Length: 163
Image (tube, rainbow, N blue to C red; front, side):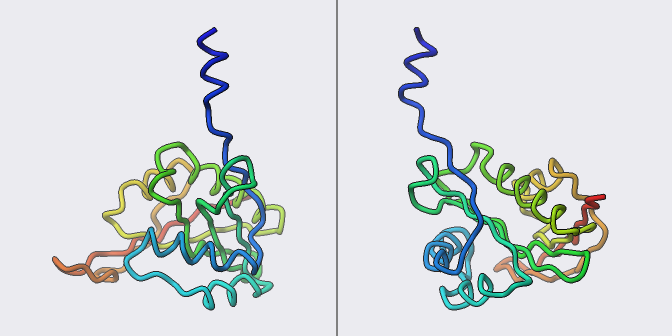
């Protein structure tokens, strides 16, 4: 009985679908909630219109609600760079970033990508845990890359092989 009640009151899981240029406004809003320096709607529209960019969005309420997360990558031959992964604060801690990343990596593999790179702030522990669970490993470090009020911090370059 308790299981039935729990299922009745559980929110539908976010649906992960391909990102489109029409998602630029919603993606820009999510980005602004998640980062100090948000990218503009125009920047996202330009990225999403680029044939070398692959993106996914997570839509709340089983796919009919607002965009609550996204991931974007740029492809160059058989490699890709994850440009950004973001999930709105209210949806964090529920595995959505992992689902987004997993779906995205699967799509990249289907497109023939063999290696995926990304850069992350060395102090961003939630992101580092996400990427470690997704199989990324540190392959480089850029000292003083990210400016912070208390002093610049390093960016870690991570890689995952998809073959």
